[in-house]
Amino acid sequence: MKHDTVIIGGGLTGLLAGISLQKAGQSTIIVSSGQNALHFFSGAFESISELPPRVADTFSEAGVRVHYKEGVSLLPMGNFRKSFLSLEDLEIFPEAKFANRALVVNFMGYHDFFSSFIAEGLEKAGIETRIRFIRLPEMEHLRQSPSEMRSVQIARTMDRIWEKVVQEIKALIKDEDAVILPQVFGLQDTTVPGRIREAIPAKVVFAGTLPPSVPGVRTIIQLRRRYEVLGGTYLMGDQVIQAHAHGNTVHSVATKNLESHYLEGKNFILASGGFFSKGLASTPTRIYEPIFGLDIDFPEDRNSWYNPDFAGRQPYMEFGVKVDENLHPFSDGVPFANLYAAGGILGYSSPGLGYAGGMAINSAFKVVDQILKDNKA
Image (cartoon, rainbow, N blue to C red; front, top):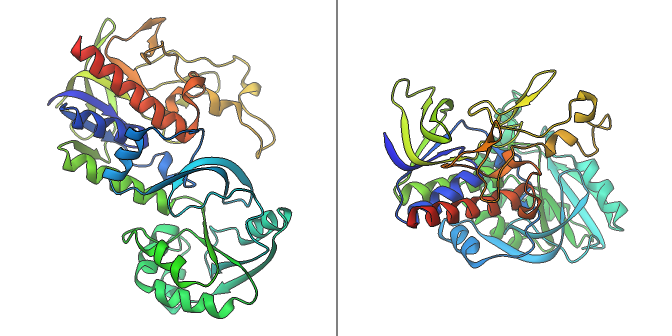
C-alpha cells in the first residue's frame, strides 16, 4: 500500500495534517490506535494566542465551530485558565467573576462531573453558588452499571431529551444569573448546546468532565469525516509495530492488523502523542520512543522525572523526541530525511510551537508546510 504520506496517530495533529495534505493533492493514510489527547480535551486550545485564517478555515470546513477572544475558561476542577481559542460551546470569559450567583446542576449518579470543585472555584472567584441534582428516568438504565454512567453514553441520551432537561433546570433556578452544566450535550446533534442556551433564562456555561470528553470525541468525529470526504484513509484501532528504514530514510511501516502488508510512503509523520497515548514509553531506567527508537532528552535520575505533588507540574510531561528546525527527529544523533515528528511527542522540545492544543495545531501545519516545500523542491 503506497501513499505520499503515512501518518502515525489519529488525534488532532494527525487529522489536521491529513486534511491539509489531502487538500494539497497528496494521498495519505492515518493509522490510529484509538484513544488520543482529544479524549481528555477541556474544550480550549492552550497556547494559541492568535487564530491564523487557515486554522479557522480547516475547523470551519469540518463543521468544528470555534470562537476566539482573550480571557479565561472554566476547567473541570473549578479553576480558571487563560484562554484564547476554544470550541464554540465552551465559554471564554473576560474575567473569572462572570456572574453574581450561579446554579451548578448535575445528574443523579454521574460522578465524573465534580460539582463541589466547580462550586468551590466559583466561590473563590466571588460567585455565590448552589448545587442541585436532577433525576431523569431516561438515565436509570445507565445507572445500573458505573461503567455505563460515562459522558459519551449520557450524551447519546441527552441529545434526545435535552428539552426535558431544560424544563427541570428552569424549575430549579431562583435568582441565579448563571447555570453551570456538565458538557454532555451535542455529541451527535451539534446544535443542542446553543438551543439550551437560548431556552434557559440565565447564562449557560458548559464545564468539562472527566474523560472521555464529549466535545473532544465530537471534534474527532467531525475532523475524521472531513478527512475521509477528502479521500484520506483512516485505519481505526490499528497500531504501527515496526518501521523499515535504510540509513536516515524510512521506507515503510508494518501495523498490527495488516500483518505482512506494509504501508509505504514518501514521507512519514509521527503524531503518536506522549505517554497517555503510548507515543512514549518508559522502563525504570529509561524513556524511549517505541517505533523508531528516536533520541529523547531525559535526566538519568528517575526521581527527577516526577513531582511528588500529584497536582503539581510533572516533569515527565515535558519530555519529547529531539528534532531539528524542520521537525525531523533524530536517531543516534542523525536526523531522518523523510520522517517528521509533531504534536504531543515533541514534549517541550520546540517551545516556539507552544504546548498542548497549541503545539498540536502549530506543529501539524509546520510539518505540512515542510513536506509540501520539500516535495516541490
